[in-house]
Length: 353
Image (cartoon, rainbow, N blue to C red):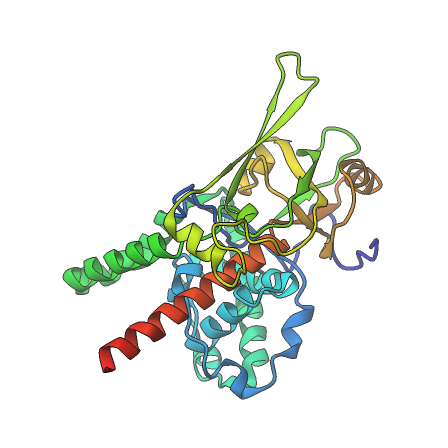
């Protein structure tokens, strides 16, 4: 798992997989913060079948405002990966979103090459997103643009404000519909995020702690807190699960045991963020985030193993981290998608009968 070729560069280099977006949700499932980046594009290459996306309905509640800067085909692609239940695809989709986020900060909408893309030329559209995103990042760096995290509502309402001027009443209706949808189908509390942090032999931006995943889908809707004793020698992990009806419906969907936790695996060890510096906070990292990938590779190991991996790097190298792109979150998003589609199908059938 140490094959990190191309996964990091020196601090002063322009890295092709720069800033991007992800999001956090509170215990009711409403997104609150929106910051992250992501990694490997390897799995993007398998989208070649034009029919693969034909029946996909884009879920804009997963995009947090970025839908205004994506084509219909790109929205279908990203949605299909986010709800696939596959952690690698989950990471790949978030990676594409970070390129789009770079475009959004420059106010760049899809150009002709992307807008005219068909299903069988999805990779062409993705390459164009990457090209445009890298150019936008270059412009940001030249201007000294800030990379501090921005509230998800601010991200959403920048493009929405323009539309609201055109049709205020319609926008109010649509926003109410989205709020109701998010209440019925809340997002996991731990959505995927990505960050690049500078390697230091001492004083790294994050500290880590060993933890255990209980093998359930419910864990995706769990707020993980880490507190220290007065002397700072003992850390205590507490977990608070969301209790809304929407969360219960998602966890129970497809489970043989109602009112359970959605058991999908055995208990497994994992590593979580125990504390962080301002550098980590600016990139949207939070205490309790689960370390799922390091340098584009899924991470399996202990907190001690992770520290050794970090300290083995030279000072000044950029390490890439993906957080919360784990099995619980991937399955929660998949069940949320399936449940939503089932309810909509039932509603259509009822209206026709």
